[in-house]
Length: 203
Image 1: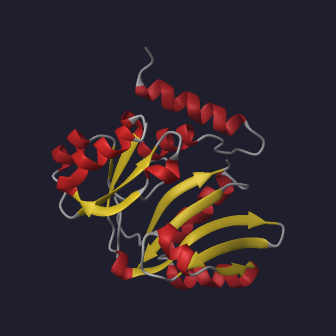
Image 2 (image 1 turned 90 degrees about the vertical axis):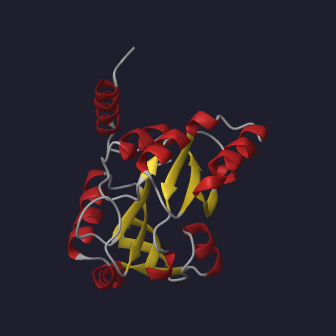
Image 3 (image 1 turned 180 degrees about the vertical axis):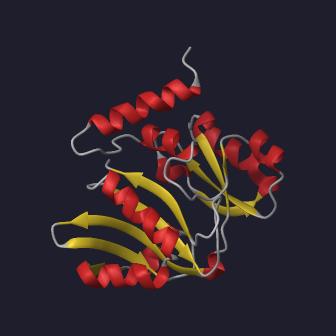
């Protein structure tokens, strides 16, 4: 059985062997994400036991590290309801060992959120300013900024170190999409940042 460190190193080797480097599978993303490879993120756990151990307070969301991600999503519910939500997904046929839990960030302090990618015309940002979880926010409002306007939008809303993080990921994975949320306050597991990375994908 390979240990976690070997597994992560193998995934890194695989994604960087592509030309250009790219995250092609959700399983690749989550292994790298959960090991901090993409920088600032909401506090996450891969089991209810880990949630309890962390002593979280507030509300959580569930995502899937496997198939059927959208159907697995549930936002901002009380931590004590986690066992019921897990059982609901078990009955829907999900592999509940692939569920991922994240502590809810302060949506009332959202600035912008959405998707960032590089195009032939420069930086492209699909975004919303609605103060809701991302899927709901983008459902209510979709705005687009490109080129210089996109750069200015990011500079106005992301703390400098968060903007540096975004550009670093774009350099590493020039054709992939970054899902992000930016807030009025510092958030996440790294200091001095107001932007959480939710996903980096080339799939």
